[in-house]
Amino acid sequence: MAVIRACPHCGQKNRIPATHLADTGRCGACKNALPPVNEPLAADTALFDEILQNARVPVLVDFWADWCGPCRMAAPEVARTAADLAGQAIVLKVDSDKHHDLAARYNVRGIPNFLVLHNGKLVHQQAGLVGHDQMEAWLRSAATVSTPA
Ligand SMILES: [Zn+2]
Image (cartoon, rainbow, N blue to C red; front, top):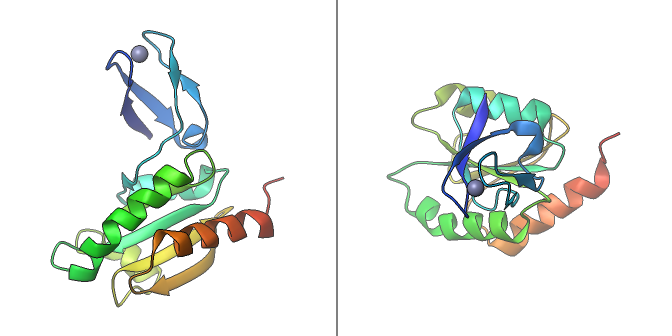
């Protein structure tokens, strides 16, 4: 289970293991640097669990759905958070209509619904539209509360 990312230099598709999503890597083809993931990743249950277990940085999860107006308003804030905290956090988007198992696991009723996870544990959960500055504050605070050994 890995995330496929296209190299910004040569277009080669590289497989990035969950443990290295927040690291600078190297393209397998052209050997140029692959920057840390700087955009939200669409997650299914398998990818979610993989990242939850292996990420070494805090993870923000955005539960959303197509029909949800506030979710569409939150989307640019979520994307901005992923860009601002590239290398320091991982941002996932979960379609709550497609992944009822994840929504049920975290008792997600209203969306958008945001989770902050670190070291496999839920450290913050909040429903409703918030700005990227708020999301970034959650992630920064999660990183200081429990630093990986
Ligand atoms: Zn390349």
